[in-house]
Length: 324
Image (tube, rainbow, N blue to C red):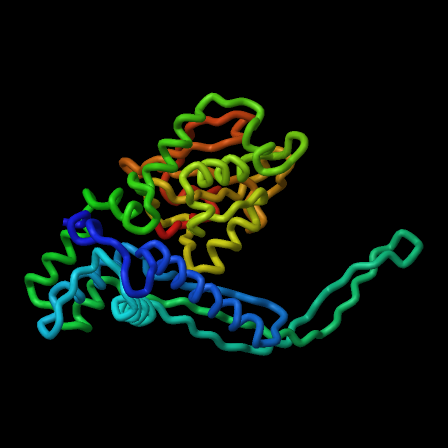
């Protein structure tokens, strides 16, 4: 049903494909986030919430557009009117809100008095916090909002069924095998030692800690970097920020999907030090079975290997959840 609905036509009217319109809306979303941050003066930024995933947005769009009693349309092609409908549904399903709060806080600084004694100085500072919250509606909530009939709800469920997960990436990014693609690429690298070609592909002249380079390399092999689905990143902390800034972040207790990006905060492992709320390592979720998360990780003992952890494991910082 999914391939029948979304494939089989040429773009017309707007001269854009479905993939191009999705990328345009993603850009609009990111621009709104950036504008919110740029227009408000703040000292500390805190973001929370998550965005509706594209398969749910497009499923609602498909059902609403193809079954509209007034003017039903096919969705295999994209024109200006259908682009406007899709944008409207996206922004009905996603909302960005913000607020500021000024807090008076005590800051303790330590200095040496020149005689080997540590002197504590307490000062009171005023800091402005900017809170940005991303909230979304689910496909089921949109079905209620649009008063979908039983038949429409059945179509919606069929579009979002597990067997269609891989086809969604073909619809969205022209990839064809969905989030399983990055898992397949990662698994093909098991046994690599030393991180070549990942760190050299990234642009480094010699070996670096290469777990993030490995994830980026796998994403690039799938076309996800060019599509804006996964960032090109060499530092785990920045990778976490990228997903958090876009409302694509889940904490450690989330049950991840294959293809999700798993970030770790090690507890006194190697040179990373004790857990501090910042990511030390990153990998790719292969699958979840019986409460266990199976991963493929680069730079795990300087090699690509499969590992496993209980769901909610304390050294898992959280997950970046690409909009496959």
